[in-house]
Amino acid sequence: MEERGLGYIADILVFALLISSAITILSALSPVDPRTESERYASSLAQSILLSFQHSTADRLGGFEYRLGALGFDLDIPVVGGSARRELRHKTIAQLIVEDALLNLRMEVAGKDFVSLQPNKSMDDELRDLLKSTLDRAIGGKFGYRLRASTKPIDLEFAKLHFEIEIVNMPGARTQLCSESLMLSLPTSNDGLSQLIKNNFGVNLPQVPEADSIIEVSLELWSS
Image (cartoon, rainbow, N blue to C red; front, side, top):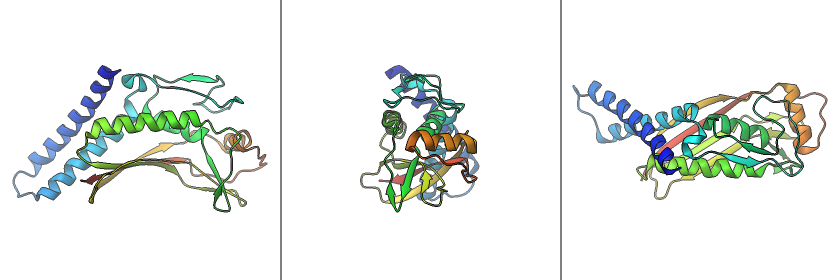
């Protein structure tokens, strides 16, 4: 696990170094403010990390598995099957974020979370641990960071449906250096979304409004 993880982090840092070197070469003919240089490096590192989320699989970090909620169910959604135990070592981190969004949508009623019948908290907890360990090792204490993955709220008239996960490590952070974003597609139709609501919350909706099927993943780096 350690060797795979270190190889993964090395890929991120090498890519960031290449970008940073290219920036340095291009700007060599003119003086560069140290803060500007720091912002450029932070931006290249954040871009590299988000790019690696799309292409690096979980097996490079020792694998990834979790168990569906105790009730168990089958969903007609491309990324989710019916098995109670899921081993997802060959999925990318981006694909894991998408699956977490599908299994852990949150319903908000009158400003408060509605208790889900099928929380699948195991998936969310495992992903949070994976994201934090990956970011801690990739950033290596050079910057503080905030990673956020979220969808736009879906208005159901009586409630709002949304997904959000946030990982923060900013001890003594002073100034935001960059904010880079990655857009992921949520692969579900309105019928699939209706089925998710029924399975997760026990609410049967004959019609679900058109939803923005995009998950925005943003990564901020802060000076410390």
